[in-house]
Image (cartoon, rainbow, N blue to C red; front, side):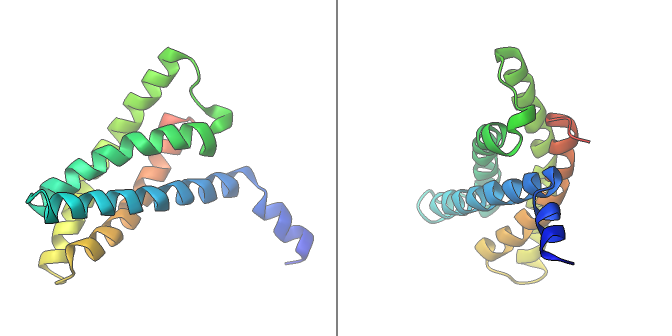
Length: 142
């Protein structure tokens, strides 16, 4: 693949959106992991309960950032559209919570991983599901 072909592929809207989605997701994963750790280590919560709370906090964070940056061309700018988008992303990402928490539990209990490391793997795997549904339904990108 030549240099100009690479630039063409790298600038394709789908590639740019995926890059931005992963960047936002990586930032949110850091926030989620920090909140998870704080809730477990200082809040005394069970790691699965803490994971659910930290996931919901980052759902809202990611919607704001993805709406403004990742999907800015299809972003929700009017109040009603913004509200509908927030509800849709909560449905998409909310439906991913059992997937992520289930994977977290499996990685901790079956693979013996530390809960923070297991959470990272669970975020990545459930992120594929979230990207597909969020891009297609929340922001209606084909």
